[in-house]
Amino acid sequence: MKNILIVGAGGQIGSELVPYLQNIYGKNNVVATDINCSACNKLAENGPFEELDALDANKYAEIVKKYKIDTIFNLVALLSATGEKNPQLAWKINMGALLNSLEIARENKCAVFTPSSIGAFGASSPLDNTPQDTVMRPSTIYGVCKVTGEMLSDYYYTRFGVDTRSVRFPGIISNLTLPGGGTTDYAVEIYYAAIKEKKFTCPLPAGTFLDMMYMPDALEACVQLMEADPSKLKHRNSFNITAMSFDPAKIYEAIKKRIPDFTMDYNVEPVKKAIADSWPNSMDDSCARAEWGWNPKWNLETMTDDMLKVVGDKFKKGLF
Ligand code: SER
Image (cartoon, rainbow, N blue to C red; front, side, top):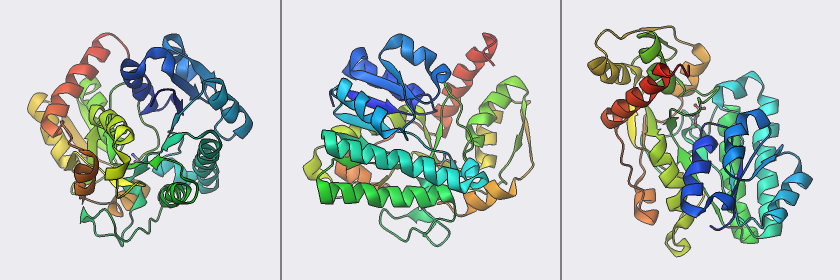
């Protein structure tokens, strides 16, 4: 990777991936783009920034040519719960951005990274120790887009030689930009609520186990996979990766150990519960470990220490 384009840079992953890549590859070699300029003021201050609607193929291609881009991170997506509110729009945005990314990559000889998700699985997949290669019949439009995207990305690799790679991210926990409209968002919101109000109302019931990961591991995965020796990759789109699996009761316990007067109750949201129930409890990520050295560093305890420290500092500074 030399000249990198991040599409959808203002979101939860992009806002941290941009500075992370700038540190490694140089500030001027990472171009941030987003449809929403105001979300990107900070990104624009630190390096090249362009306003881009990923569905605008002409402008997208111009930017790729202007900066001589060789690697595209396509991070544009409506998440699972939002997608169910407007499935047609979710298909249009999620698939439109991916198809433009793949076509522009084919024409300009770029590599493409696109996140897939635990949401690519469905209730008929084995939900414990979910294998890398198994039944994938998701019940959400988000998942339908992810499975289609995985297949389309593999197709562009085998048919046109486009260097496409991706991971199936679990819920990502972070403290810079809040996620929005996802089923796993509760695992971020709980830390903010614990610091601010010392109480949290959980939208998923106890016993709902899902794979999760702290943002630093997610960022490292992006670079590790894109820098991996292609001859070692038996898979491409997309690798299971996980760092931990917990349910609401377990994350609550971890926080309560550190904030003894923290309380949690439940107000289960049926759409989110149905989505979470159809997703893996824990994935098998042995292929990622074997093929490109995936090895997460953070677990629930170390992540909770760090989240409470960082979110606590933000609160003291009046940032939320
Ligand atoms: N975090 C996403 C969601 O909950 C899953 O990839 O929608």
